[in-house]
Image (tube, rainbow, N blue to C red; front, side, top):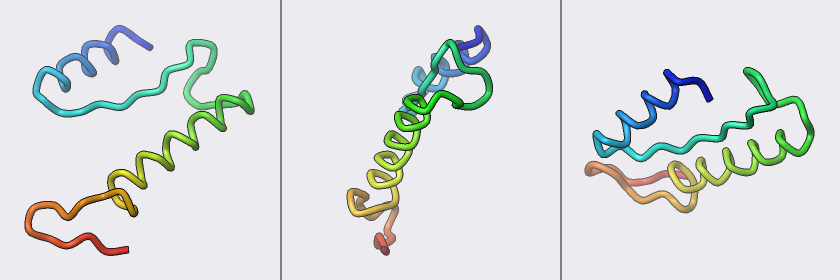
Length: 66
């Protein structure tokens, strides 16, 4: 993780916005190792499920649709 990324993450969290990150120091701008790809996509699918899928709740007066 770069210094600028760390500062951004800290500032966003300080503003009360939840942040989810996955940094693997041996990877560059992407995931090339098979296990890292699995980890990334597992977390991505969990994020989608939580925020727009079956685990999501209706927000700001709207109903969640699936």
